[in-house]
Image: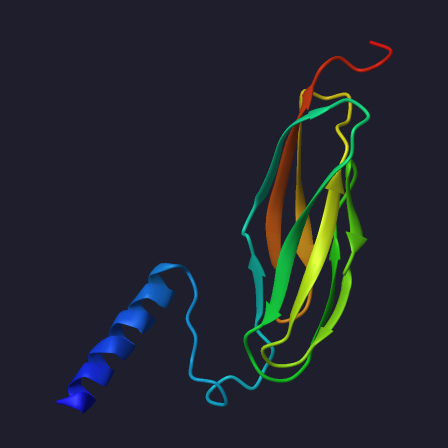
Length: 135
């Protein structure tokens, strides 16, 4: 009876992970290469006043084995403030802090590129609220 409950619980957890876009094996099995996972998958800074700087963060994780070595990059008006280079062992996590200060455009959109473990990209967006100082 206990074995059946354990199998059912494992099936539910595994299904939930696959539905959410991730698949994970038990620690110490299957994966010998680094696997990069970044969360959240996107950041929307919302409306930001002209000449104001706001920050937010991504978590970079190594869900695989080996060493995940890489860096996070993004083009202006977004900027990596800290955690932009990483060397993560299995199950290690690092915070990557990003800032946004609106350009003169009504809205800004870009992509943060994370290298290592086949790499991933995460969209970032923000909007200008209030008029630019010399418009």
